[in-house]
Image 1 (cartoon, rainbow, N blue to C red):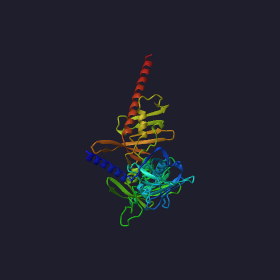
Image 2: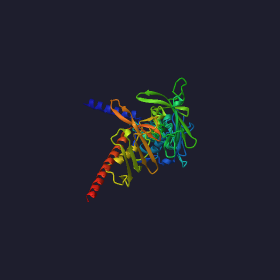
Image 3: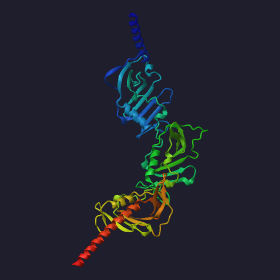
Image 4: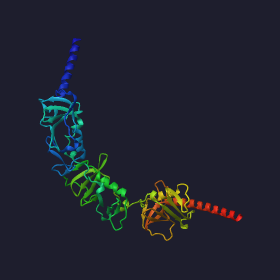
Amino acid sequence: MKELRGALLALVVLGVVAVLYFSGGTQEVKTEESKEIFRFEKHELIRVEIEQPGREPLVLTESEGAWTIEGKDLVASTNMINRIKHQLHDLDARTEVAQSPENPTLYGLGENAIRVKLSLRSDRTISFLAGDPNPSAVSYYIQPIPGDTVYTVKKSAMDYYSLDFDSFREPRFARFDSKDVHRIYIERGDTSERSYSFEKNEKGYWFMDSASREQVDSEAMQRIIAKAASLKARRYIDTEDPHFNYGFNPPVVSMTLEFHGSDTLRIQQGKSFSEGRENLAYYRLNGSGSIYVSRSGWQDLIPEDKDGLRNRKIMNVEWEDIQSITGTIYPEAGSDQVGNATVRQVAAEWVWDDGSIVPGSTPKRVAQAISRLRVLSFEEREVPAQPAAELIFVTEERQQRVVLGGEAEPFVDAEGNSYSRRYLWLENKAFVIDTHLFRVLEDMIREYGRKDTADQEKRDRQNRIKKGN
């Protein structure tokens, strides 16, 4: 029994020695109250200096609200700057570890410690050594300078100072404010036939920058611009390999953005490649400098030709703004509903031309069909001398005539379902649309025909009564 107790005691002693050995023989003393280490306002920070052993010092500086990497002409990472401000402006110690430790290397605070210096607007500076993680790996050692006391602080306050240089670069390499872009020139490959330019007017609508001044899909343009502004580098290539083809001669796609003033930015996408499950591509700005590796797919937002960006919502009118609609269906339409009808919107009510209220929602459906009209394809056709139907709608700003022609070739989907389509002309430009507008126009004329028949029957009865008297 004594031998057993002796063996157990020896195991306990061995365990204590092992703990002391692997923990560096340190003992952390929890502070009774939160120990303030640093206090400053986030907006006061204007300079960060980081010295990592064996690496070139890294200096981040702020000027007029913009952070850059000193001596590199590079934008500093917004996320990293915000992280430094957030983690350090009110940093407290978790534990007090040691004062004037005999062996600071046990804490990663010896000659190989990372040195950090913060400069504030008030000319005050804050300096400290960032050490290793403690044995639990949930805290890091820190030694404020001046001072000889070692503390532990939360991991998130220290673990990023050992990251490499690229981690402190702004990953959004084509940063700009999309609202400031007013002209775009797009080139696909080396074919001039696939080069086209666009210009934005003062109302924010995009147009072909050509003699036609044709409006293009502004939402699609904004998606292309927003995607370019949000491109993030996964890594950087600052020195090109002369023997490697990055795909910039010519680039797959190139886009030049002009901003208000004289500033321009040219974004080129080179070769795409797969890395694991990700599809990546090479990018470059203004034809030179660093090459950025980022997600591919930006070019997929840019159509193969300008027709892919032409505005397919051609009316640019809200249905609530339509004040009156006059529709006519001619015999050439081959419809049972030949005739015409006019409706007006008065005090949020739709009325016939004689002022009587229109029951149901048909006028609203016609107005919505006009507002939501989208082009299925662009055509080169003359306006027919005798259309199948036409309508005229009036808003406070304009009066617009729309001509409907005969049926176009139906669309057949992959499952063999057929969808009828019609030709439409707007200001002598031909399009193919679905048949929804024509169908609701038929409904409006049918309902007016019923009203007209009922009104005529009423007049006939009144005439018979008068003759009977």
